[in-house]
Amino acid sequence: MTKSAKFVDFFWEHDYIGTTGFECLCRLMKDGRTMCREVEEYFKQRAKAEANYCKALQSIFRSSEEKNGGTLSSAWQEVKHQTLKQANIHEEARETFQKILDDLSKFTEDQKQQTRSFEDRVKKSQTNKKSLYNRTLDLEKAYSVKCRDLDQAIAQLEQMSNSVTVTQKDVDRAKAKADKSRENMEQADIAYKTSLEHLERARQTWEVDMREACNGFQNLEEVRLFYLRDELWKGSNVDSQMCVDIDKSSEKIRCRLEGCDPGKDIEDFIGLNKTGSNPPSEIQYRSHFDERSHKKDENKRERPPQPTPQTAGRGRRGGREGMLHMVVLTRFYRQMSVYKPNTRTPAYPADSKLPSESSVNRLVLSTRRQRINRYHVLVCGTTGPLYKLFGK
Image (cartoon, rainbow, N blue to C red; front, side, top):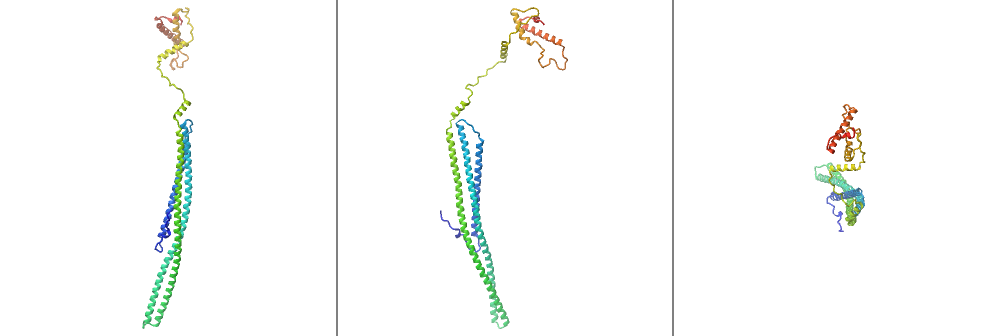
């Protein structure tokens, strides 16, 4: 380290009561405290930033869900684990920055107290020196006035002593005035000399205090410079260590990602969740009329055998003709009635008069006859009272 110069050799001035050098040193110490506060604020903000970043990483870790299965899922779990570890790294950095901040705050306060002690001593001695200096100037002026008064009194006495026209009484009066002036001059001289002695002692005291202040200021400044350098160095080491630790954490993530096998993950997923190997077949077109005919055939196959209807007093019809009439009448007999007791819809409007039972029966019989004749024409090709075969 280069040997530095001394404050005590370069901050004096010719003005007896000048304070320029001392004020310059005080300004240096004030700037040093300002820089200490700026460094404190820097570490305070760094600690706050690390705390916020740590909380953000922890929040990210808590927000992600754990899912097992597959090599990539295992790597993802490692990423979350290392994220939490990096959050802890930033938490440790925050604690280190906070410790540096606390030590720096204490150091700054100590520097402030010591600087104030030196400043108060120098200012006190400087004020005393300035006061004595002004008093000495006043006494010097008074001494000069008394000396001039003595000179005038002596000159007047000599003039009157050499004059023949001046009486002895006037000469004695001038002599008394000269003696009084000499006495006043001697008192002023003693006061002036005494003031100079006091001023010199005050100056010596101020000089001692000034030298101590210069040495103390230089010592405090050197300590401050070395201390701030070391603290900032520690802060840089914290950043470097964080980078190293985070790089190690990232390397573990990279190693786990290198072991990922997408093909294996796909095979494992298929093995655990497969549902089938063939897709659904094409949907074919189905005609509505074909379906209706198909349903009729099914109903025909499922319908139990019907009893042969009896004729009205004519016995049974035999042969193919009887069978044909039986099939026709059996298939459509259920649709011949117009009055269905189970339906909820009334056959007539609600506000009309209901017909009598005989009228309903005649309406049913007429409708049955019409349907029977219609299907008789369709099957046999002739018209006739087919309904007479089965009675009314």
